[in-house]
Image (tube, rainbow, N blue to C red; front, side, top):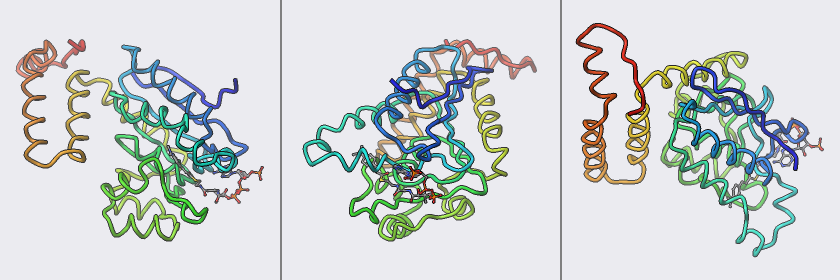
Length: 257
Ligand code: DAK
């Protein structure tokens, strides 16, 4: 089976996953998504991995679902689409994902970037949901996550016209947290991953889960979840270590316990 993913690390707690299907601008066929979801299975199980960076090439993060593969599927084929399982795997990954996006992040590529917890974009990045040009619509969060991230008006604009936005617009809209020169994007994402890797793992996990609840729950439910998660942390050795280290004016040594 072809392998369309380069896996590097973990180094200082960060695993780097690079989409590697340059001949089709990293179009996400089933195999690419399988490679990605299997790599995330491994990263989830590996205690040395504390954050994952997903990136593509300088020209394309990913130009969307593989259009040829999609064209070969009829209604039943779409209904039984094996890719759905892989998308769900990415969505339920419990460790932080940082996307380092250069070039095209279109359709499923934009949706993959939006599965990340933190999004760093090169100045050459283009985010778009062009499915409407193909007579279809987004199918992996391009109406739901996008609307939650950039607001309804811009999400409508992007999904109904198919027109992409550039990195600067994506920053203004809150889709990405930072932009930088394309050659620095991956390094920047790795640095962020390393910073996270030095924190207490259980606190990181619960923080990610809690921030994500902001999209799934109303404020009262979300605040209740946050309070429960905060309380759970009181039972961890790392909390004690963090508080002790502050008072003893030293760096904490977290153990994930
Ligand atoms: N699929 C397959 N091949 C692609 C591709 C794609 N999405 N995008 C590019 N390629 C291929 C091109 O066909 C070309 O191959 P050759 O002709 O050389 O063999 C090669 O990559 C280089 O592309 P171009 O020659 O077109 O390069 P340009 O620089 O001129 O243009 C471009 C770059 C990104 C503007 C252009 O390639 C383009 O418009 N690509 C299509 C973008 C697009 O429409 N993406 C949305 C696809 S639909 C779901 C989950 C997800 C989805 C749906 C359901 N479920 C779980 C239910 C997602 C759907 C989509 O993403």
